[in-house]
Image (cartoon, rainbow, N blue to C red; front, side):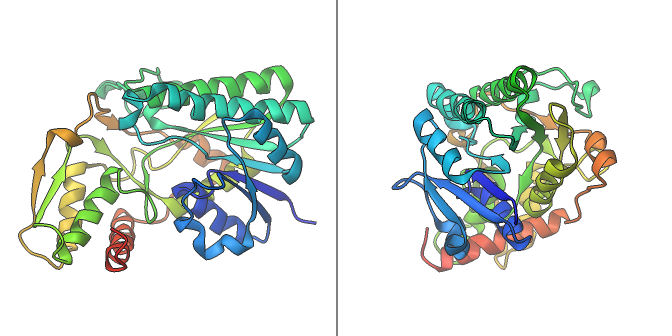
Length: 328
């Protein structure tokens, strides 16, 4: 008898790749979707292999019912509002989804007396304003969030830890850094650049990439490496402890402008220019997000295997197919 695995946010970027991985391992996968709102493009190829449950994580009754149906051994709680920019205009919505949605799941686990493990994935964005002399970021670094999204993710992590300490909920806490690859929405930086290049190659846009601020420094992990890390975290990490996951200071660090230049070099079109425009620039940014992931690596043996160039190639190919199919 195989474990039942429940993935919230399964139709999203990370959730769909995690579902690919877990299905290949032969486990039963339950996925939550909002019956008329979830975009199914990312899971179209595996939709018939997933046991679907209609659920709105902001509704505690709906969540409790989903957990009763699925009886999960492991819960990967990936449902979230994750695009930073709208969080300034809609902070209450981000609180409802990211914080209250998590409370609904944890409370349902408590009420149903489930012995499931639950992965609570945080974000490097939670650290916010990190100074150069404070790098690399560790599990103990000071949190100085600079946007409402980050505040809701901090709250999510803290309440999960409270449920672990107070009720014995088996919580695996992680914060991931800068993961990229196919299926990530083009409201985010690298997919947005790749999408524009794909349109330029098809003659649908002038040869100019519009960007926001491009000086922020990052290193990047392929989504396939990340979901493998999430699976390993559930297998090997200690409940209640926090672990950072992603590339670290030993891997190559890039500015977003350097990433754009690498993508342009992969294009069949010459002389693509870059223009910074105000509407794509956040009110505040996080200039450097470089984590020290040695705690997780030493415990698990995991390390990222896929190169930055492969991340960019896979992302560009995804958006080329997207544009060629007329989905733009």
